[in-house]
Length: 93
Image (cartoon, rainbow, N blue to C red; front, side, top):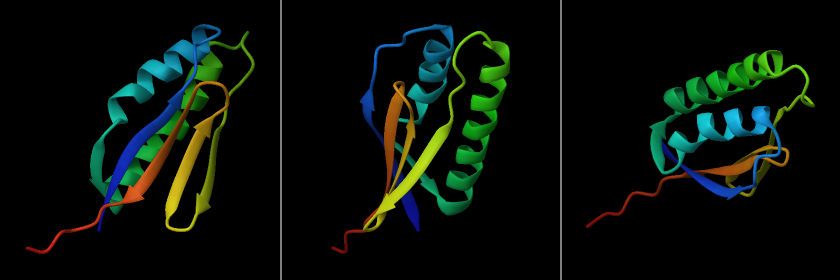
């Protein structure tokens, strides 16, 4: 099964940490990934959040939050970005 990633909302960055996180996340908008690649990308994102928290230690640390509704999974970095992962549907012709 494939999954479609869509950035739902972005916020204006308030500090260097927010700006760095937003720049890192922008390329994932409109990606279509399989389950294994999606899990790898989310793990990389969690690691990058930790790394950037350490680099910009004077800023309030950020975390990647996750929640699900019906069939979709949503992720959010508080006051930076929110994105959703939707299962891709196949169209039979």
